[in-house]
Length: 163
Image (cartoon, rainbow, N blue to C red):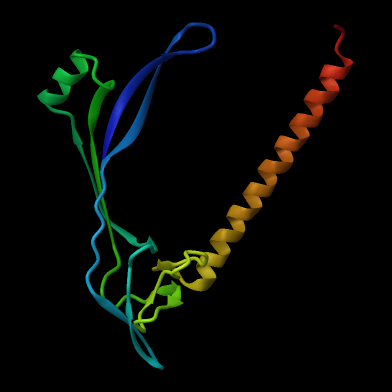
């Protein structure tokens, strides 16, 4: 994945200028080599089409912007480009994986034809994924409770405030 880091100027509610740094994806490419999943019961082909792949990040580099980006920023095209970030993820051969998918008519494991069931290929174990999803669920509940409490407080405040 290639991302562009840029600065964007905006104004806050008081009219003061704010400079924010953001990343936007310039390009992203996925490629999959034919492979099979093997365990004690045998081997089965994997069809990656439609999979949510949780791979290992193996490379990330950053290159500061060059003269071409300076020309774009002087012309006001999309904010000031600061640089490009390059990131690569892989699932190396021989690494244990967790696969949650459907058996296809071809006998391979892949995304369900109806797209109703999840299809995940992960370098994390089932237990690690469950633990991670548990923390995500907890923080979503905490956020929902906080938003509800804020909403109740605002309603009470608006009812009690004069006029």
